[in-house]
Length: 108
Length: 116
Image 1 (cartoon, one colour):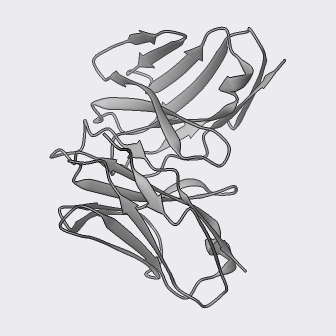
Image 2: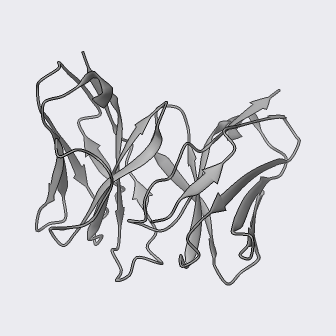
């Protein structure tokens, strides 16, 4: 199954850019996803990238995919306090564990 | 379309009891996956059901079981509860496309289980 690894914590100042990194093991997944989890809530699908793309931009979010290095990143531009949450990179359904995610803290 | 719903949202049980959690997927979705989330272990995959059959399984003891009904609703059961079973249990639904390589999951709000 798929395994993903992310840094546990990231702290940025409001207005700065945030970059959350993820490495994964299984290169067969056609899509890779980013989810956001606010305290006490379920996971909200943020964005995804198709495996034949290098980059996808969606408003303040930019996803970069390096298939050779099996590295995925999520950049949040102009980070706001409302972006404080846990962010998970994930494979498609039924492909194992999401891991601990990255806890993003945005300081005013 | 209505999202994924889970009931109950909060539950308190004591050690040794059993518990059943319920998940109703998005209309038209045939796959339901269950996850356990704890502060120390992250988000761990329990199992996936598709068309009333368990299709994938994580690394959890047999006390954790599930089932899926013909309307795709799913239940998860934990028997002989232990303190360490205290967690947020999340279910996710997806279309359940063959192969799963393009299957987007949508999550419910979770059930917070506390074992005393």
